[in-house]
Length: 224
Image 1 (cartoon, rainbow, N blue to C red):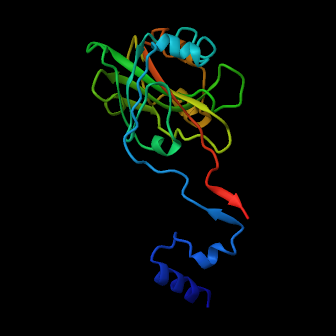
Image 2: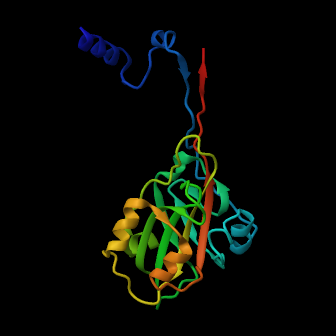
Image 3: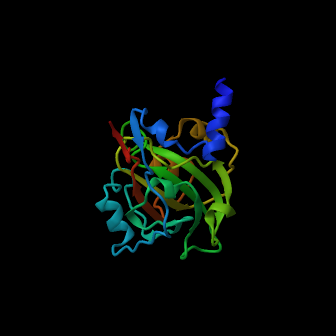
């Protein structure tokens, strides 16, 4: 009997996700669309990366010296600048990251982190991904070697505003992406940027960076 009822609902309303009006009357909440993507989200920054990283409390707390240049790029439907707000739904699909001032003779390490995603003591940050031995290109995400696989940058519900960044370091030597240290980082997802640069023999100061802010909140839901 339950199976027949399900078939009746799907057949009558077409999509299982569409809730019939008669059902909504007995539900404890009213469900409404939370957000949608209407167009490409652009942003323009009028401040330099060093000032932005300091203004948003990233340097010197997590990065003793902020990056001097800005990374370009963003997501399929939103550009990342220096602290611009991006709805969480727009941050699911990263598209590209580039460093216009990069050197063709250099190799880089690209670290993607969430400064507000780990409850531990500062300067711990939550690790999103690490790419090593990255040559300068139009898309740093696709041209290097994956040392720590990418995970979703969408923050947990109700954890407030998150500052999510990409930080680029120049390497002194080639880095083995298969070493045990990266396996541990992939499991713990806890990182300290200054210590990481020392451990893997990176140039101590990041050459470029960019970050955005985002927050996942309950919306469009009201109780009867």
